[in-house]
Image (tube, rainbow, N blue to C red; front, top):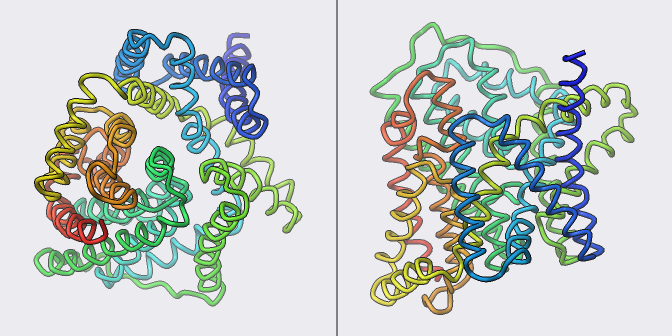
Length: 454
């Protein structure tokens, strides 16, 4: 009886989160005030439900940030309406991280993951190509699978017991590129949304900076591997069949078509890119079922998504909602205005000093456990590109470059925690020790490029 009750509670939490996302999408189009209040109410219930199941650190950090945000917003005199607006503003990102994992279903059923496994194992005898394979695969998979891409790659390579440094370098460099350009990521969606920049205007710059990071990462690894050659036990070679090659080519086209579809819909409709991504995430598995007529195979992963994937978002819901509320509440406060004035004055003296100050502030805040949404989100809402003397695109690039670097280096980021757990090393080793040089070079080159663009 107790087990049945627990299963019922689990399903209720899952339906609560999914209902919140679906009602948000409906509200985006119908724009009815009473429906917005219902969505906000469901969000608060989802937050409270997640608080009971979240890990200890995210739970208390989330409670502290949410409480602080609510108190600050209440003291500003905006009352319930201000709090409701702050919570509703973060709902697009919650919907994004909840619904985006649906895209992995057709990829798994289509056999694409197995093809990637064969490719990577075939490259074990060639470390440079293996590293390029890991980072390149993550470059394509991470934009649509988020942290799931790292988990999948690690499953392929875990039995091979590769050096911790190689895995840490490959996972962080490959994953961090998506943070700067993928519309399926909270980082890009949040910054472009707050700065009111269409994704189609930003994507070339974002992908360019991401590819530069990928190239620099592979060059640095080429020097590293000369001093740390792999053991001969890793020198095995598998045959790549024609079908495997075709699957890999299809995977590349799948990602290109996916991004192209989002850009096309944005151009035609002018809808928010976050909403477009959420809708595409729902539609793609349905189209896969129609095209392949494999409905029976589609049902188990959908049930698994409902019963497991959605319920694994407790930490994310706690951190995203609380950090978003705190960032919204900080807007217009004396402290936020003080930081904004300081950075604006600094920008008038030197763009280099301004960019470095932004990075130091965000890295300092995220290094003690505060999520990037609170730090970068507050800056995105507070800073005015025109007052600073740069373009909106330049400000977006700087904030997303900073977000990417802090995601890799902060020992409390989801990426760093996951990679540290996989390799059995500390967050400091995963971030600064193994990848500090790479991200220092990216920061310097990135700031130089942004100053030219701006």
